[in-house]
Image 1 (spheres, rainbow, N blue to C red):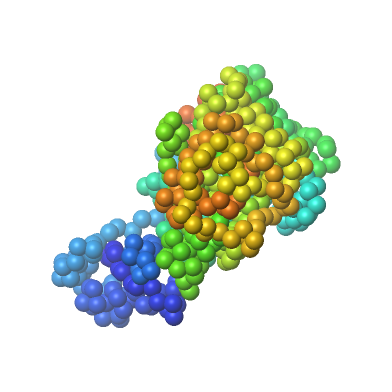
Image 2 (image 1 turned 90 degrees about the horizontal axis):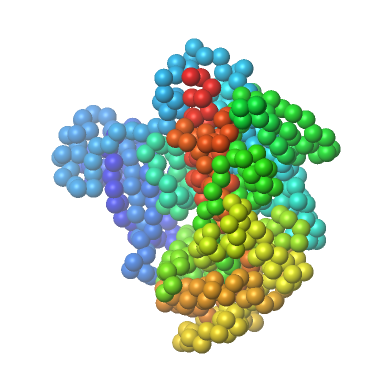
Length: 560
């Protein structure tokens, strides 16, 4: 296969950048580069697309493509074109059984192995899909409702403030990612092609083809809802089972401490024991009651660093101007950004889960406590841009030595946020926040945001309040220092009328449930901690990849 890197195309507002149109356009480009006829191209696929805005407002699309050709040998074509951006590469593809050492799977009976997967977020869903596809019959237990019923419950919560602690933005089919931007970028290296497999699964079940090659891929909450439902239906068609509104309340252990089953509570309140050979623990980072149950079962856990902060909103036009050199560029949509800095005291401050054209959502899951998150639809056509601006914290900040002191630290912050506005999302202008924190540093040289026309864009009611009282003073100081630094990166970012909403407390798990090099809990044999809740992922893609990896470990455990 021939790969061509760095194909540079100036942005044209009248050009069609859909996958189908670009494949045809890039075929012509490839023919000129390789000095071949279009009839010699058997297939062409886009490997990567990014935007070069270094010379804004001149913008350039950068493509990498792979193509198969007939006629001449590929090596001769590459040598003849004399282009450093052209090379021969081998085709890579994910193969489940190549990651399960010593198994001749066709000779094994897979259907009699009882596998329970606790949680139907990306980690549990992709683990279950991969196992079911290979012939196992996994049972997924999810405490929340299916995505259709869940959407109704969440919409009612946003409209009325009546929280369902079982089904909400955190719990239910698809996990917390269902009500997010649906970003699929990850920092995890993909040498084993699990990321490629995850993207294939997404597109096979309704996600747009572009996610396979965009440098910053996203799906959007509206499309993601149907995708997770389609994956669930395929799991069932392969012979797997999915039970919703079924909460695992206890692990059943043998005398030697190994797992032999779970106690699950249905929507009717009745509990029953379900025996199993192994269980995958894919609970997500908000399953605090499960963390406490695991502590009681003496599961090996460690407190881990994470980050807390606020959602910050700006007009999307301000971000577009910074990133594109124009408030609106036809064909590109809302611009994203990524910001990182380190304070004088050594704390990291950075943007997280940035949502172009998105909403700040009430993402609470416990009564009397409030947490926020960011969400956008596939069109990203909201007026505001929002991102979490978060500050790193570690166990020394938690105010306790217990393994779950990070959980209690989160809860205290969420209680502060809830009390501020009676359960509504508290919001404050950044200028007022900064003054309340005693920071006298001069802001931008002019006003970039019109306060009269700029309002919070939220799902769930908001109310202006003293957001600066939520976090400890030291973290507020780091937040302001970070915002001022970011104002030097994006003009107007630290404008007095930027909005600060809080609290962003669920960035990642406050604990790590330790596992060995075969993915099994170091404290409970037969239990496989997986994904964000276990402390091994930090987003939809990394959780999905960890779910696939855990499926491989489960197969190895059961078949050797």
